[in-house]
Length: 396
Image 1 (cartoon, helix red, strand yellow):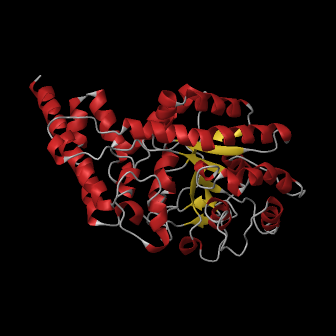
Image 2 (cartoon, rainbow, N blue to C red):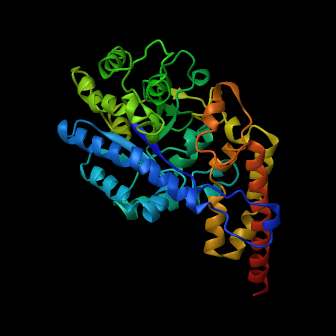
């Protein structure tokens, strides 16, 4: 089981009349309120259940997390007890932490140097807070390609996570370990999206033919894979527990009984991504010539880059890299990186139908167009600041 732990620093609905006045860009009240709400509903209760399950199973239950630098900063500011509860989990030796971009960004697509710096920042943060040095990598929103695998292999990672997308797999199963195309020194762990989404999205859906989902029923589905796979990778947002799926829907009761039902079968056990990489050989190579993500039905980049607003906003953002870094101003660089967080572009998504409700989750804007306007206003103000500081640096 692998969980993504992330909350963006949401932006204010920044007005065009504020440009040039350098008012604060981030909605501090909303960010604090959201962190406190999810801490109460998800992070603390779920961490307690995970810890109890690890102890109850004598360490046989194991999980992995990737926590963005952005969410860790907010925990430190608003809910430091969450950091402490994760430290308790890590002390058990049954929890693995993964690396990703500190600011949960699409940096790899626009600046390889910036991507590398953000991953290194994340690694430093994880080592400092938890005394843990990750050896497995997952990119923002599971965005993955051959090129990304080759790059992170050179950075020293032994494993990388990706979506088990049908259009890539074809007849093959996500329940085996693979090598990325042309990269033999790193292994690929693929999300079993059907079984993952049964928990993450369908658990409380009364129209679903399998409703209600119970731990024994789910364990039976896992057991059916024995003999035709080595690993079942269940990847999902941590907020699945208590936030996306509310406590009164039975999600915590499901989680409490899940490990014991899985462990009833003699061939089953729980392992971390690093253990999977060590234990199993690759059964072949998988070719991801273009980027695949875990978002929406298309499993591509359209959630963040599917329309002209998103494309223009992110293009203008990365055009500022030179002047921002030339300023050598740590505050300016930090703000620029926080403006890179993928959620800002996700809020500008205009896709509807199957994915519409997903894009409304914790969205601070009434429409994608409002998100774009606020973002561009902030970017225009930020550009004025960056230009001034870079000019001062040059003149000095």
